[in-house]
Length: 163
Image 1: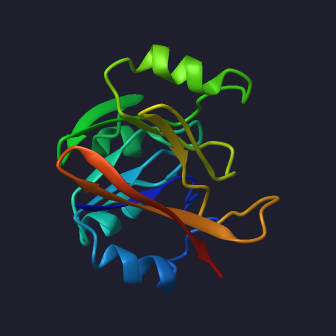
Image 2: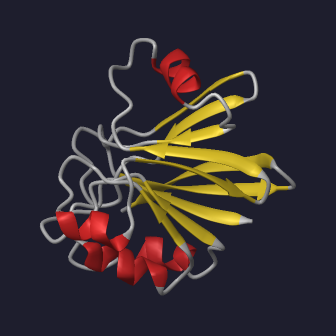
Image 3: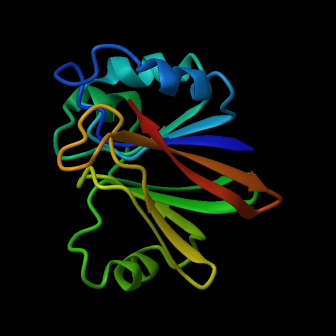
């Protein structure tokens, strides 16, 4: 299963339309996860034209994003992998331990908020922030993630730049 991981798209201020490098990956996605700060449910509708979308609410999301179905946190199974999602994972110090405690049954936690990509693990437990495809902040370029899952195992994690 190929999953495209997104966060912090910030429409309509930053997301005017889907960036072409992202659209190319979305066309091959089996599922999409969005870790919040979509800012308008129209982006979720747009993404849903590519593949099923799982989303959480971010601190900049309006009531339309929650009405679309985004939750404050989400736990789901993707191809046998237990995936949890939250927008803000808190301070960097102790993040792995804190996310493991918050989501004890998860194999992977996808989060956003900082716009700073991160892929960290503790044994088989992993946390992943795909960054932002549209608002790079202090990063050299925007980013999103591509996760490959096979029979409950995360077999590949890529951070893809958006130029």
